[in-house]
Length: 222
Image (cartoon, rainbow, N blue to C red; front, side, top):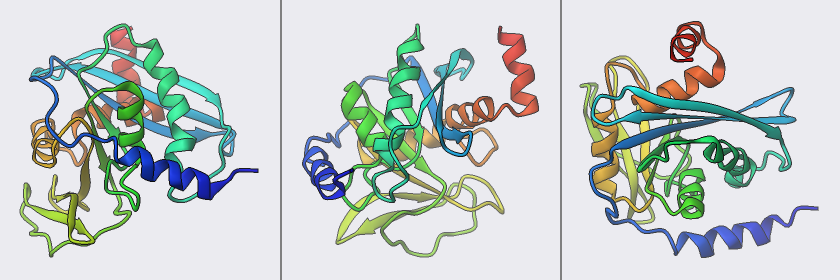
């Protein structure tokens, strides 16, 4: 039986180890990571795409599928997702300097979402890029593309709300590990190329989901 109270305590303890300053030079390689589930949740699928900066040309990509060992428990999703992320990380021949992850960084009730969890495990700068807000509040966001508002919780800024594309819901961006709040938003902006998602996570999601366009690109890269 899973001791959820113990795991929440672990999150609180590990959150204190998270570094929220810029602990890296300009990256040469940026990765995007996405996690999903197959076969009614019994299989966890993680995709990671490594891109060269600043061209954002794909250097390599991999998908890892492993049995799902942890149930779905809100607030503890990183324990369900990180094993597959570690599995796909091991497949990379070119290790990135920065990882953008589809999920939360410190914008989490205990400041320890999947981007923070993976960043701490790998000792690498990470950014969480979520499609939905998990916690916190913010002022009304302008409809103008590129507009942003601080995401706050308990008088603390935990991330940003960012309008990446017109007529699309905003993104919720937060540092994972070894990167500041401002740099997290800046690097996501650098990687937006006309779509809602930044290129690294957009490609990770597309390749993992086996969508037609990304599938053709996979064949060309093979």
